[in-house]
Length: 220
Image 1 (cartoon, rainbow, N blue to C red):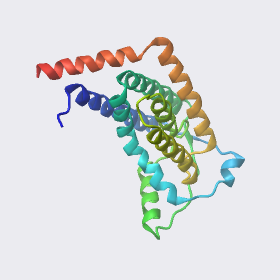
Image 2: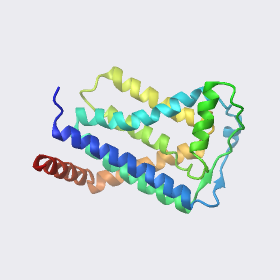
Image 3: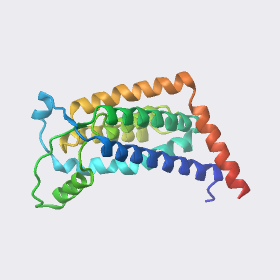
Image 4: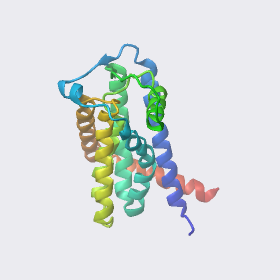
């Protein structure tokens, strides 16, 4: 099956968005010198369940494949998704700099593959300084919003994406990567970003960018 140039450039835009999210996160950690520990009574009662690490890391695959699915079914929804994601990233970055937060993680003795993977994730995500909002949760909420809007996507696949996204959100609590406040902040920020993008029609700029990429690829 021949892949169109428009599809290839859509993939490039997705990759660039992922790079932007990763870059903003790492820069935020670099400048988050004195993070605040946030914890609620609910968080103290949530058990540490390392088995949820597999759901947690599945997010990295969804980060790439969900926007591709969105583009396949609706380019307009894709442009809106990318625009909203970028605004979400920028708002989160400002919070990371102005109000860095951290979490208290459990000590892990690596006695199984699951614990080894969990400990590896902990080490890769150290120092822990950019927790509020949870980007895992924020982007999962966007997965849900924009796949539900896809009219041609079968209800079964919509349900699978929604359920998996919700399980990933829950997993952030069970593996002690985030607290309740981080999830609530993600909801607020995604809602704000969604409204901003709709009001300012920012998706049109992503569409123009996509068309310019396609034009450049055609010339090459």
